[in-house]
Length: 336
Image 1 (cartoon, rainbow, N blue to C red):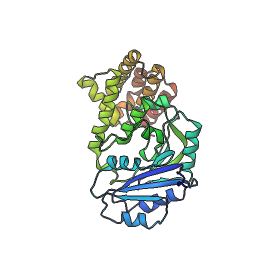
Image 2 (cartoon, helix red, strand yellow):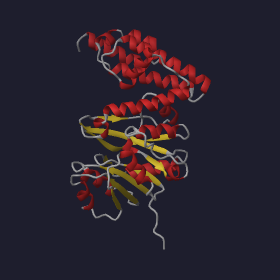
Image 3 (cartoon, rainbow, N blue to C red):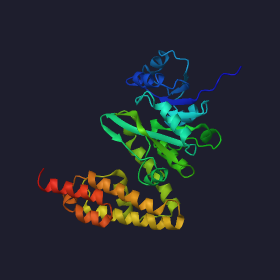
Image 4 (cartoon, rainbow, N blue to C red):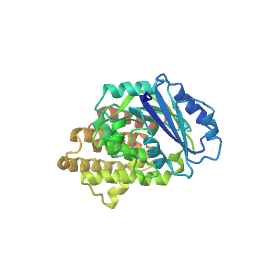
């Protein structure tokens, strides 16, 4: 009799994760949905990572130890090829799953058979403490990726056929930002979604990949954005390239004029989209304006605060956000 295949394959790539690994593994092993396999690829760790994994003695854990260091992207593809589950979930060795994460994501994907890739709402802890909240709107998420990634990598859950039938493996030319690349590529062909519950605590610390590979991470993310602009038929000159870079980085203390120039970027994107018809044009304009307003609101420049009514007028018609902006100006001016 053949062994029954699990509902979910959870994949994890680890390298010197001893500090947080036990808590992370514990959050997976104690999931309310118990029918899963956990495939862990160790990338030549030199600490007690392997010892910690082996201490769990859980038959659902499958540990693969590399003979040479391969890097995260190749490790993930190696793990994907070993998956037997109907669904495949990502997890990192430093994050914490909510006990019902797997169950809720599986339920959600079964309710939405059109979704090939999903994430969930996320709470960060450690060096940064915040909550990521995005609406479950596939078209809007696709538009937002013109500026930045929208799904936290360890929240990914994908359908098996996306890998084994449609060939959507990670692109191994990306040492980092491979999650952004995969999600954006998938979104060109299939809707992606977000479970509205907070199902993952995402740990922020100096040794995580996004911190260690900061410059490389941005360069790779820029490749993904450039690919989208090329598909859209947009070529930016040097001046507008600087504005775009400031926006995607959400740089602080920029001049008020930069935000007005960013509005011109939105106009150019929408103009190009009318010809290509890649995105819903009305939603595209609204979404990018919302993202631009959020950048404005996070800016700490007094010049921007003083000129905010002018900036808001330049960007356009979002009365709720404008009202919030003017309240900030009022408090700044009065020293509250």
